[in-house]
Image (cartoon, rainbow, N blue to C red; front, side, top):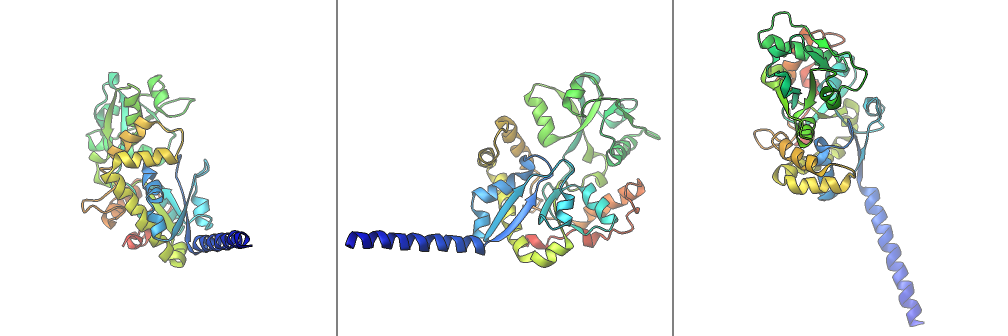
Length: 328
């Protein structure tokens, strides 16, 4: 009878423990974030924040979702996700159409974009792009950017020649001679090429015009979501900020965390990319995510002058398209 009592007591304790755990889970703030692409080092702070317990300390359960091929903006606008990783074009184009998108954090403090070419083509500066074939999907924003840096480098009335390629605008197409240059990111594609032994020349976009040194990618939300869930989102963002700060101080350990969370990744690329991006995650004050309205204003003036926005930027008020409040 005594033994039976102990077993019964154990069951009671187990039930109490399970009930307590269930209540703890129920009491957590559930926040979801949708990626912009496959998981990569732009997202490393999310995985670090989970693994290091920063989110748990804030009482937040974060769900990380991968976006469909056509992007995750609809999910954000219909409140199916709380946060979305997106780009400057997503924010500005959407906001000018009257969509209530708001940037709540900059993942990178500088634009890490580069135009790359095979070294044998001797393209070393924007003026060398005259008459060269651009491997591109034809984005108006990308073409305007190439024209802008060509003009900055002294080319009068610059024209961009698009490559006539039936394949993807990627490194393989470049290597196979389907085009002469390609837009990639230093902290990912360029490093991947180097690891494969592909030697490339690079033109760093941000060095030719301050307006092109914008925040990208960013974490986005909506006016409505922030108004309804500000406390929960602020908790999540505090934890995420700690995750990125950890990656800056410990790129090797952060890489291990990411590799453990995401299968099938190239270890050498993840490690090299984390080291590179660690120089871009924080601002000059050592803060993650903080944004300056002057950066947005420069891009708005440029994009409006280039005719890239649906209403020529008339619906965009700089103070309304971003907030640092969730990071404070």
